[in-house]
Length: 502
Image (spheres, rainbow, N blue to C red):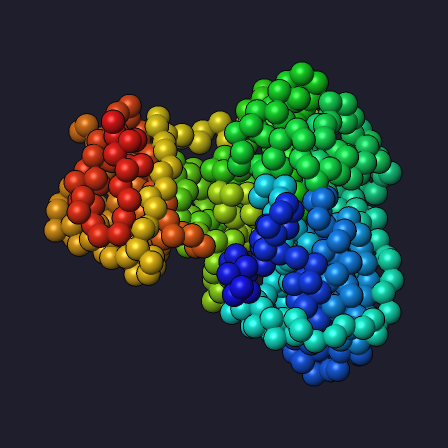
């Protein structure tokens, strides 16, 4: 087996449960040893001079994989702090929290993926590792797999979540300008953890005075028996929406399994995720300081751009992939551009005030502060985005790339569309086209009222196609035009596009 096939972006992921696992305790053990050596070398130390922290989400395979990874770290000579159930953002925060400060952290999680999957995320005080660094780890680990392992460094159980909860509580009190014990008295918050690692957020809300009646799926259960913990999943969002309406709450919050992504539901049961979540955060930040730049991924709507501009901000679209968005926001700040937020439509959101860490729970905490202030004024979070123009139609289609060299054939298909757009006056290439090809259209006598984006997937042999129209029937018109251009493109499965048109 080629261990490099386990890479997923900048994480390691694989099937960990069932008869044919691809991510086993043996692989986790070797990766633990490889990561400890990597961190020690990066810090100019020996493994015996460093400490690595490990945590996990609620997945059924989490305890075994954490134990194996901890043994691998220990076999290098490094010390281990076992945080047990934890969140990915908390694993980073530990690296900069006095009294903890491990030299690196490993989080055992596969985020929102099905219950049979699991993975490892590698973190240092500088943030997550790059894809190239993870490939290097996999190479080293595979070479170590046949070497004997023996416990050398000490392994200690030491929970970090209580400290992380205190940090979030401090942010709420600071945001509300108070030091009272229960600053959220009078606010009704429904928490849905999807049986992932985030159930403790309900405890935090209650400790600060909020009413949490109607909260659901707080107990960790790696079988995810109620719904997949994913703020983008329609079933999950329908579940939290029903809970908010049933409880007549002020808002609901929902997390993915490791809590680096989140979404909310307003008092009227309206889901605030994807473009709405970006608009809400932009409104909050721009209300405090107009003129700032909001960095998003490439699939955001044209209505969002208008909304951000109307609030006095600049919308900067960049490549899909949360690390891409975060790194670009950091780069812009380094160049002197005032950029407080990097956010993907998936719910990955990183605030400058929080070390540009993609922390869904911190994001929700900022929203809780705003919700409390708005309630005191007789308003809700949804009132801030009442003017967000949403498309009449939208769709996402995934075109499989059948050629073995899928990246090359994907690039050829994108170039084919780009060449056609350059030759035809009615196809307008977006001026901020930074990924794939984004084309806008003047439909039915209007102007700039429809668009599609065709891009190469970050991880898979797929061309994702996003399409939005401000008028009924516009999506079909654009899809037909695109099909005519791509018809005959070698190595691309156009059947999903044809099905969407028919």
